[in-house]
Image 1: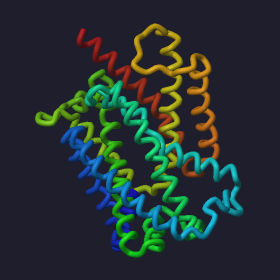
Image 2 (image 1 turned 90 degrees about the vertical axis):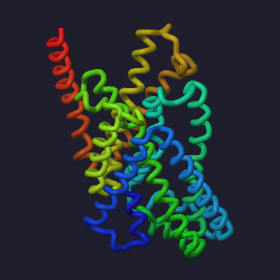
Image 3 (image 1 turned 180 degrees about the vertical axis):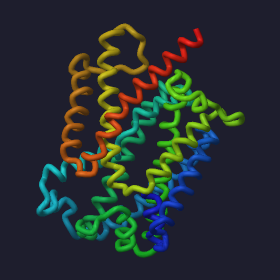
Image 4 (image 1 turned 30 degrees about the vertical axis):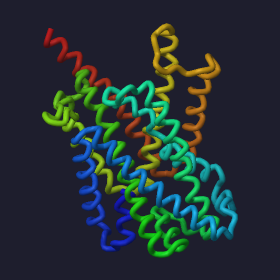
Length: 332
């Protein structure tokens, strides 16, 4: 996982099986925070975000004073098909900016979500764009070494630009960023299997609540174990397969909004897609178009393994639905 990649920058011995062990320990720590509840997750995430923003601002300021190169040259790496570059870049963008719809999974644990969600998104989305774009642009402008960029290179860039203090701070910030991402992912993803268990699609154990914190602790632990197992793969492999799954979720989400508007047009809605039919068409076709490009431009590993979970998903759903119907019939 990326957090361990950044740790290995200062601890080169973290390789091979040691890399995976450290990743498992990190996942276990995040699982413990999530078992403690959404308040604990929020406090930890806020502290992490403040530290990251301070370090990113410092990098941008120092790099801006050393601007020597055009950060947008070349737009496409030499001898690489432009479509492939765009497809991989789009896949990365989908990963970086995906997941916002998952905040609905914890809406019942948030005070006044109809008011607070739009405010939070209005603040977080621009900050996310700035946090990704600005340090990359300023670092490339100062160093002009786009060929050397790889997973975890922000630490190298900060070291070259500002010396050891900035390199160390950026390593910690990058580590914290990935911890914060994992923290939020575990929070939002674990409520789904808990709800499915309550509806009878998964074993009842997944809906079990912690006696003290009231969190779906079994679902959190099982999801964390899956994350620990996946940590054996590289970031690029996981990213490209993840994009297939993310696209599947996105397509189902936008199509469900179309069906809901058609079948229940008068239903009271805290949120409603604006601009009538034009707005609805945009919300549906824009993600679909991006999805097609991202899948067409994905790497061979993604094209080989990405469709597997998409095909297995409907099969597992119908199996679980059949089991649920049988259980319901037996109770009756």
